[in-house]
Image (cartoon, rainbow, N blue to C red; front, side, top):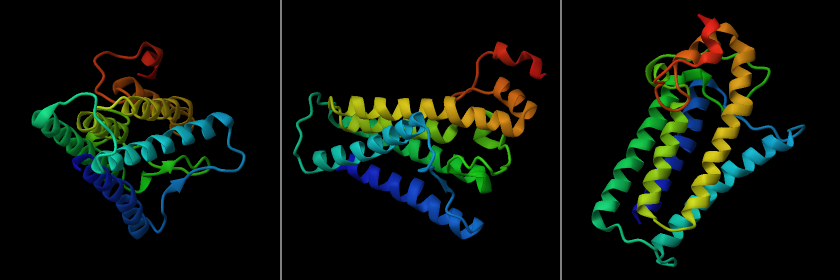
Length: 204
């Protein structure tokens, strides 16, 4: 039941809640998912992310209904660890969304010009929303240590990686130029950078 409650909390707060808040303050839902003229890779990425979310929710429902048998018993400690990591993931996601302000989007608006956000969590990593989502996934794995959870989380991670590397980063490079190159050089993708990226030394 803990996994299902966490999933509902994540979808309610970090997805539906964020869309509603963005619409209230910006007059726009912030969703930029292309359907027409989308590349095969983009459609694949969108499918991976959607299947990952749906798969995690369905598996949580099956666990709550006692319709699947867990392969590993992590006990109460595992449950508490999973809940803790899951809550940290939700909090990180929501905080990062809030710090993006009007620049927050689901997907990419190619014709839009948004502010390059580099404060708060974004001063340490370029994609803290995805960091929070990954932490949430790790929490679910502790709560549902089942073989089916592995491909679900792996698919979600692959979808995030492809979207960030193939679409978001190139878009931000085109939009913000040297400012983004400098930011890219000083921060990690999901975690703080420990060393400088040699490809952008000239950005200084």
